Image (cartoon, rainbow, N blue to C red; front, side, top):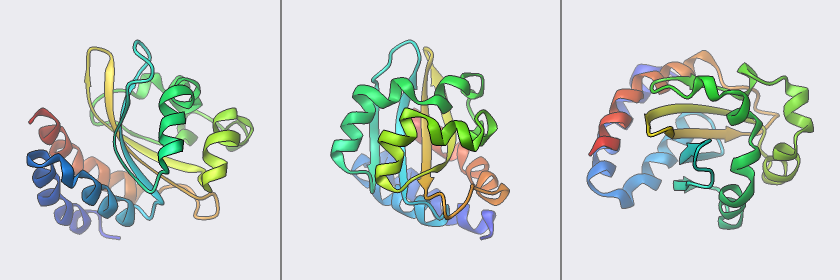
Length: 168
């Protein structure tokens, strides 16, 4: 994957979705494919106001989306331990704050990710306002392995476009 070429293919669709929010699932589909992920999600994450929700998502069943907002968002160990990473433009993975063993033993993995066949994740903090972060993330299977520096670079290149789209 060439991060620059991949980013260029996503910039136009990001701005199209900013003008027509019904297009976000198409953007997330393309993003997940380029990131070699199973899912892609735009969520609102907040320690001050848990349960903020999912703005758009692909390949995540509705019952899992609901359980994320109602329960798993509050116990997500990546979000808890990675609160210091919640700065606009930051790209992170759970491996930056948790060992693979800690992830595998967590309730979050056992009851939320594992039933969906997911393990590894990567996230981009698009913006932070009033202690609430807009995050674009993707998950994939354990077998697929962790996300790489190429994936991080792609998200860094897309950050200013997601940020501008979020501001309207």
